[in-house]
Each structure stands twice: as structure tokens, then as C-alpha cells.
Amino acid sequence: MDEGKVLAERFEVNRAHLRAVAYRMLGSMSEADDAVQEAWLRLGRTDTAGVDNLAGWLTTVVARICLDMLRSRQSRREEPLGFEEPDPTTIGGDGVDPEHQALLADSVGLALLVVLDTLDPAERLAFVLHDMFAVPFDEIAPIVGRSSTCVRRSA
Image (cartoon, rainbow, N blue to C red; front, top):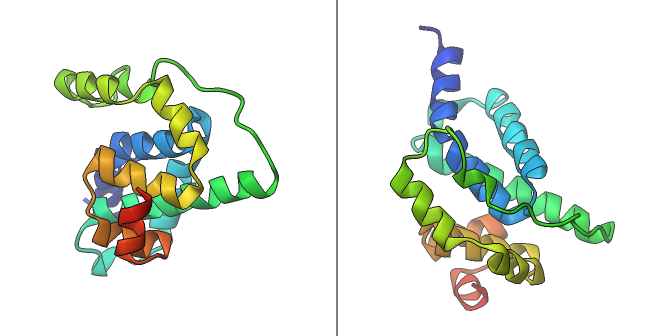
């Protein structure tokens, strides 16, 4: 099997997780899909020989893409059209098991998305990665460009 197919399969294994991270950051499924697609394009342009943890690398890339999208939205003073209800990352056959779907459905609702919308992009990213995906603050700090102490206080 060639290297491109192996990389595509490894990406597909992580796609549902990446969409969930992007959706919770952006509040829009279409923007989340755009962020995941951009991550795929960046993966294709990157030498992955030195990447030990592809899932972590992809999560970091998607998080940074979402930060850029949120900052761009803020600078253009855009407001999202609204929240999609129910959370589309918990519906359908995207490879997520039913127990995981139930946990995600319980953990994220419209009220949480409203609260997330009040946070600045870096705070939103820190909150989503730490509280929803159990990423340690020390790993979040370099993504948002702040110290781990600062990230811990803001999340």
C-alpha cells in the first residue's frame, strides 16, 4: 500500500474527532468541515516522517485553523448565523460508538455553545480542548501562545 493511502486512512480514523473539536470551536458544521478539510490539505503538504502522534498533530492543526477562523470572524465583526441543534457531531454513522454519542450529547448543548460564544478565541480553544477532550494545559499553552498558568486561569 502506498504512503498516500496509509496517510489517508490514518486521517479518516481521526476525522470524527477533528470535526467534533472544530464544531465545538466554531459552532457551525460547515465551518467545521472547512477546518477539517484545511487540516487534510496541510497534512498533504507536510513531511509526516517526524510526527510521532498524528492524532495530536491533527488536533493541534485543526485548533489553530479554528483560532484563525474565529479571529478572522472577530476582525470582520461577523456573527454566526445560529447554532445547529442537535449537535451534528453526535448523529449518524461517522464511526462513533453509541456510548460515545450519548456522552457527547449530554456534554454539549445549546447553552454551552452560547457560553462558548462569549469567550475570546484563545479562551474558547483552551476550554474546549481541556474540558471536552482532556488535553492537559501544558499541551494547550503552545497552541494558543500563552503560558500554561495563563491558560489554566482562562479556561
